[in-house]
Image: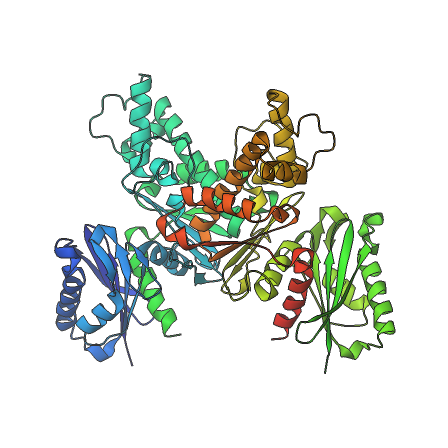
Amino acid sequence: MGKYIFGVDIGGTSSKIGIFDSEGNLLEKWEISTETNNQGRNVLKNAATSLKEKMQKRDITENEVIGIGIGLPGTKDKEGGFDCPNLNWRHVMAESEMCDLMGGIRVEALNDANAAALGEMWKGSAKGYRDVVMVTIGTGVGGGIILGGQLLNGVHGGAGEIGCIVVNSQEAEAIGSGSKGCLEQYASATGLVNMTRRRLERDHDPSVLDNMEMMTAKHIFDAGKSGDKLALEMISVFSRILGKGLAVVSCTIDPEIYVIGGGVSKAGEMLVTAIRKAFLEDVPDHCRMTKFVSASLGNDAGMYGAVYAVMESIG
Amino acid sequence: MGKYIFGVDIGGTSSKIGIFDSEGNLLEKWEISTETNNQGRNVLKNAATSLKEKMQKRDITENEVIGIGIGLPGTKDKEGGFDCPNLNWRHVMAESEMCDLMGGIRVEALNDANAAALGEMWKGSAKGYRDVVMVTIGTGVGGGIILGGQLLNGVHGGAGEIGCIVVNSQEAEAIGSGSKGCLEQYASATGLVNMTRRRLERDHDPSVLDNMEMMTAKHIFDAGKSGDKLALEMISVFSRILGKGLAVVSCTIDPEIYVIGGGVSKAGEMLVTAIRKAFLEDVPDHCRMTKFVSASLGNDAGMYGAVYAVMESIG
C-alpha cells in the first residue's frame, strides 16, 4: 500500500517538487531549475533524478509511491502529448516518459493553470466549492475551470484560455504569440507595465512612476496603495478589463467562485474588489452572488493540484 | 411498461406538443396557444388538458406514458422554481404542478434553449457530438451548452446566456431587460432591424430597405441575398458580433461544434459562414477545427430535447 504522492509543478525557469503523504499533507518541498535547452529533453529527467535522490535519502521505495502528479505550462492534446512553448516541447508524452524514468510509478500530467485550480479547490481559497474558475495573473494570464468538481479541458485542450479572449479588436500592436487585443495583452503584469508606459509617454501627469526605468507591476500597485493618481487610474483600467472578461465567462458557464492568483494577485483585496466591481457592471442579476477571492496557496497551488489529480485518478 | 413520451415546448405565444414512442420517434405533433394572462396560471393547465384529450382519442392510459418533458422560456433555480418573464411566471414549480395535473406522470422541465441544444444533439445537426453549443437567434439570443453529453446549467441557472455577453460598453440605449450593449441588443432579429434603421437614418445610402415600414430580419437577409450593399454591410456587422461572441465562448469552454438555430438561422449557410469567418479572426489556433452548422430540427428542437431529458432521467 502506497504512502506517498509526489507533486511536481514545472515552470519555465524553475520547478517545484513536493512530497505528500497519502492524506495530501505536504511533508517536504524544494525547487530545482528547469533546463529548457536541447528541446527541453532534460526537464523530466532532472525532476526524476531529484525525486530519486530524495527517495533514497528518506528510504522511500517505489512500491511506497502511489503516484506522481505533474503540472506543465502547456496544453495536452487528445493523444496525451504536451505542447509547452516555454519548455521548447512539441507533443511530448510526459506521462509515459516520466513513468519510464521512475520505474513504472503511475503519473498524471495536466496543464499548470488547471492544476492550480484543483489545488485551490482542494486545499486553498475555493475549498468546498465545485464550480470554480481560477485566474492566474502573472507574466501572462492563465485560467483553469472546474465544473461539478471536474476539470474542463475543452475538446482541443483549450478551455479556460481566459488570456486569449479578445477585448480590443482595434489593437494595432501584436504580442509574442502574434495575437492582437487579447485580454492578456493588457491584464497581465507585462500588460499593466506596457499600458502605464504608454500612458506616461502620451501625457506626463505627475506620478512616482514617471521616469522609472525598471517599472514592474508591483511598483504600480505600490504606487496605487500610496495614492498615486496615475497608478490608480491604470489599476482601474487593468481591473476593468479583467472584470469585464470574467463577466463574459459567467454568461457562458456561470461558476460559483473566481479565485484570483498568480504574482499580480499579491496586490490582494484592492485588486479583487476592483475586478468584482467591474464584473458586476456587466453581468445579469443572477451573477450578483458570484464570489471573488484571492488564491491562498501561492506558488504551491500547482503542486497541490497535481497531487489531487493523482488521488482523483485512483478514485 | 411505458410506450409513450410527451414533449412540450412552451413559448410566449404558442406551445408545441408532441407524442413520441419509447424509441424517440415523433408520432404526432400539434400546437396550442399560450395563455399568459392571470400570472400565466393556465399555461400548464392548458397543455395538460390538450394532452389528456389526445390520450383519450388515442386510447393511451397514464400507465403507458413514460414521462413528460417540458421546455420553458426561463431559468430554473436551485429549488426547481422557474422564472419565465414571457409567461409572467415567478418561481413556478413546473415539474410538480404538471405532475399533479397529469395524475402523477413523471415530468422533467428545463430551459427551452437547453432543450433545443439537447434536441439537436440527439436527432439534429449535432448528432454524434458531445460538446455542443446551441445558439438560438430569434427575437432575442439564447444559448444552450452541452459538455461531455451533459447540459451545463450554471450555479445560478445562468450558463449559456450568450445573449447577455456585453459587447459594447459605450452603448447609451438600454433594451427591455434594462441592460446596455449586450450581444442580444445587436445580434438578434430585433437588433439587426434596429441597427439597420439607425444606419439608414444616419446615411441615406440607396437600398431596397430604405423607407420600408415593417422591416424584418428576413427582409434584410433577402435584400442581402439579392446583392443590396447596405443589407450586406448590416449582415456583416451582425455576423461579426456573433462570431466574436462565440470566440469568447471557445476561449472559455472550447466546444466541438456550434449549432446556429432560431428564426434568423433560416438565412442558412450565408449566415453560418459569416459567423465562422469572424470567429476565426479572434480564436487561438486550436479552435480552427471548431465546427459550425445550421440547426436542422427547426421549431421542433425544444420538443425533441424535452423528450430526451425524460429518457436521460430514467437512465
